[in-house]
Length: 136
Length: 240
Image (tube, rainbow over all chains, first blue to last red; front, side):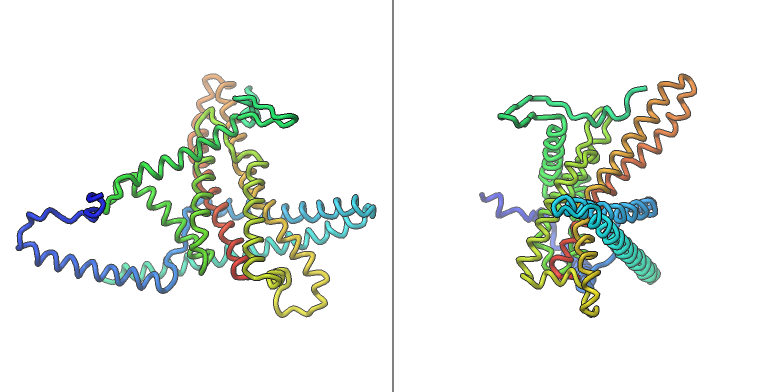
């Protein structure tokens, strides 16, 4: 139990008083970094999180293709099931195929918009970073 | 040439039969357990030191935590913090399932549509319930864009509903298709290595960057699966 209390391990107490100046400098440095981190947090987000890298293009293409296909599949499936249930073959299948296609295009539009926003945000962040590191 | 689809076969390890139900412990189940055990062992062992200055393993674990924490903050926004444990668990599970599948001779859990579809359906239902609990009937406004003339609803509402229902399908198909296609491709090219004798060096050389690419895709798809979960959660919490 007593070990838990001691947990935030302090440096060995044998350090002389001569290190106090160094400690103060270290503390003010920590203070400065803390403030910078807090400011970054307050502005809500720094770099958009991404580990995608070079595969971004292929990933985006696949994502869009899947979005389109999924909506068409779901739409057609709903139409098919309703047709069997209500005995209206083949009308609801046709209607829901069209609805599914429209939903697919809506999905594609939303995905593309989202990817675009993400790319823009990344570019802006990269630019901001460049300016920051430009300062001495 | 060895059958490139053989790697996807589910074979029982411990046959368990309950009535008409086949509840056998299969190689698929084994690798799910391995993924969970691997993720748990990795996180607990790497964080055991809890050092202020992290060791190499601890840094890796911390980077993963930070990536997902930032993802939740950026994509879910306010109120997303509560769902972080689930989203982090989801990411670690999919990541370990994908990466374990890259070990030659192992089984890729996520290359089965039923596994990814079960995951996606669970997420879809959970997110929908969260949305309904938070917003009540107002949740239905998700299916009608604000400001549109009311009569456009005749077309827009079915389209939006189908679009919403397509989410679990696209979420699961994406992960499943990426993993399956990659593994089939690897196996087919590996088959050529054996077939072509001494000239097999050519497909073998090609296999090296391809394996690296597949490993990248395994990580990337886990990331995309998680980020889309965050996006869906955001829609449920904030209604666009």
